[in-house]
Length: 198
Image 1 (cartoon, one colour):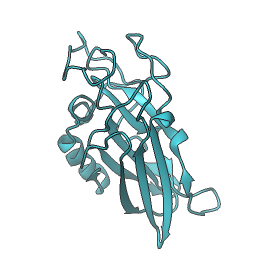
Image 2: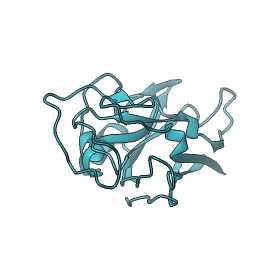
Image 3: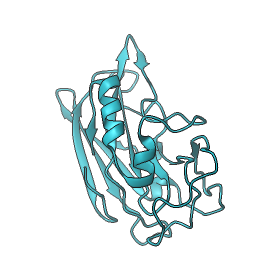
Image 4: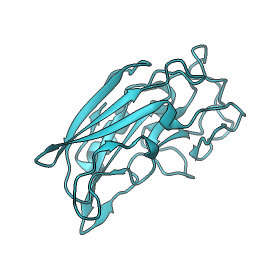
């Protein structure tokens, strides 16, 4: 897992069968506890006809507030970990502004995500940090990714990393606040059998 600096990118390659989805989480580095992740149940990898999906899937990425820290104005001078919320809040989507009134561009203006099909059920997903020069310039922390298994068309555990409207769990806070993926990697390995630090 490495930090993806503004202008940089990181790729990972994985195998997935029809009906499966890929998901990931990475910290908005210059924030107290915000993270990027696809909407659940992740980015579907095959269309209804069973053909692999390729191309720009950035529109499926959202920015989330982990709900464990009070958000300072985002930027390189954010103090980590910052002030704890008096009691943890549920995970919520940051849609333009956070609970403290700080403003954010859409996630797809900060992160470009591109899916390539390599053949033989193998895909490569590339995350590019396009925040350079924007009002929300930020590094992305090391993160985790996971594949949701599909059994007879139903995704097994369609939300392995987070659940909107619920409290953060299973080590996601460590990513959202510090970019530390150890706990969440261990958890994902137990429930999906597939986990890899980004």
